[in-house]
Amino acid sequence: MSALFKWYNGRLAARPVLTQCLTTAFLFGTGDIIAQTFSPDATLGGKYDYIRTGRMCVYGGVVFAPLAIQWYRMISARIVIPGRWAAEALARMAVDQMVWAPVGITSFYVSMGVLQLHSLEKIRQEIQTKWRQTMIRNYIVWPAVQFVNFAMVPLEYRLMVVNIVSIFWNAYLSWISAASSEQNYGRS
Image 1 (cartoon, rainbow, N blue to C red):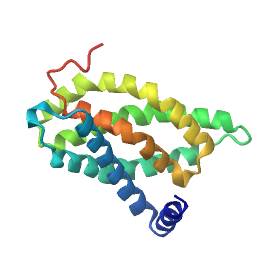
Image 2: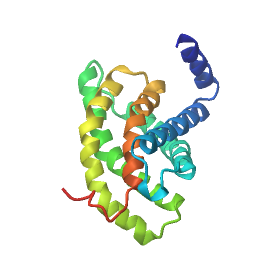
Image 3: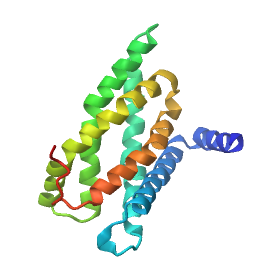
Image 4: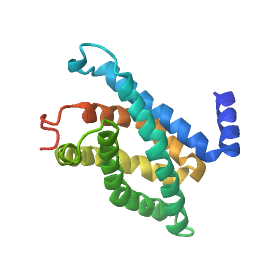
């Protein structure tokens, strides 16, 4: 494990954005593999959907990672409470959950719709049907993770922490994104 960490640190030092984007793409794809393995799409007749995994990789590496890198840099620079690490971490987590989470979840559904060549109406319907329930589940998982992330993890590793936790979160997102809009995911 130490050799892997050393190798990753070397790549991170040499090409930080590229390393984080590739790592994110790989881990988003991993989440989709888990989703398809444990909850296969009945409409595919037991076949694996490689294109779906590819879409998750593209979203993770091309959309999510670059935005998340800039987001973490920005809130780390702008939300500073000297000598009060817990208040600082809490403030960063609150802003993250009030601003980034809703935008990020919307971005996910829009990106998946675009990558699937859905119409704007279909994308709007996906958001309307699934966004609320996804946000509720987001607030079950992410506030605690992000508090610890902002309190204890150096800036250059925050995206990796999110990516590791996201393996299972992305499995959920992949599963719900692939689920039919006619299913009642957005209602509670």
